[in-house]
Image (cartoon, rainbow, N blue to C red):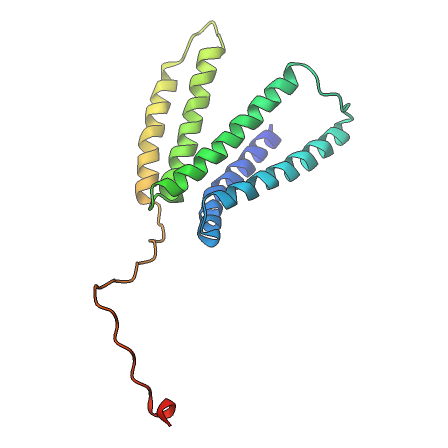
Length: 176
């Protein structure tokens, strides 16, 4: 049981670093969509290399048919759309940065996953009311984390005036 927890913690680490890294990429490239293209290339490289490596390790065949392939494409599309909407969230609000966006994304993802499971997995016991308490608690936690995460402020814009600046006087060295 330790490996699933270890890998889940690693995923939380990587995805937790994703938002700040995306913010840095956006700032450095001065574009919200150039990083998205780079993200797509990285997903393609790591998805193919990791998938093929895992298949070789397990001795899988390279035949892709049936419902598993369909659901794999659906999952990949959902991941790509999530990366796109995360990109849109990070740039559309002006000051909306990882400290606000990421708690909403990941707290919301946990909630959506729980609701989809509750709607699709039928159990004899039904839905435990503590699920709804957890979802409410998650909403409170999203607000607390987003409101209290330290963050860098955007750079100040230089003050503008209606006057045209006067030409600088030459220095004594320049005048000679």
